Length: 77
Image (cartoon, rainbow, N blue to C red):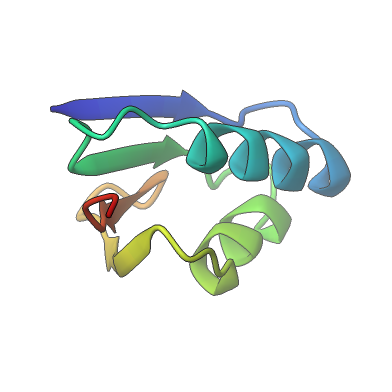
């Protein structure tokens, strides 16, 4: 299962809180989280998404679409 999180129009603080909340509360069935961060309004959120660390993230994948990034999610134990 794939979930999507849209961080358009978020501040860096808001984006971090949304990432924390979303990853802490993901269903065990979710295998991928697609983050839509945009890229034309600057790179602050994109950079945050690319360097963000959480115990549920197995791998960070840059998309061919420069406005989104995917997180492969570890299975919950």
